[in-house]
Image (cartoon, rainbow, N blue to C red; front, top):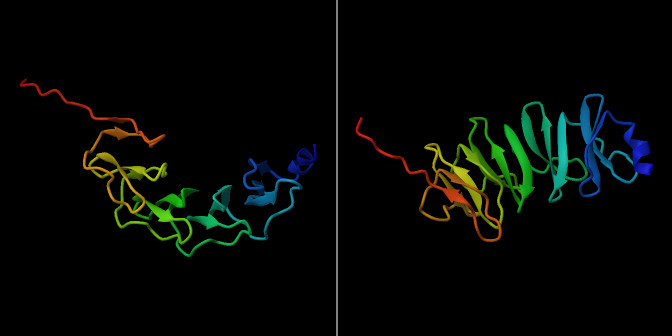
Length: 173
């Protein structure tokens, strides 16, 4: 009942995570305490998301980054897109539209390679897609987990990942 009473103060209210909820008021976004709806910090952003591993995705203009529970920016780097942290790694896109992972505690890239797409880490491995479309998994350091390349790969769950390799039939037409 109490939570419902404070939600009317905001234009949009997201789900609570780590005791805080993202809200929107007058085209600005920030986090509030789930118990009473009071702002968790003074800063305002163009976009904020739920907290994951003590950090939330935030955006000001075209710059994406993570913020702490007190609303302070977690690191200096800015990216074209940032996703939530998982296993202290976050999927980010640079200004050249290439994807990679950063260490959530520093904001720095974990490895030098850039990909067409990367997925979050699960069980210490992340699926990636290279420029040629080949997909495979990388470890926390960015090293390929195996030499084989596939057309599709899913995230690891309970030590296994579904992969597929399409065989093409060659005809002499």
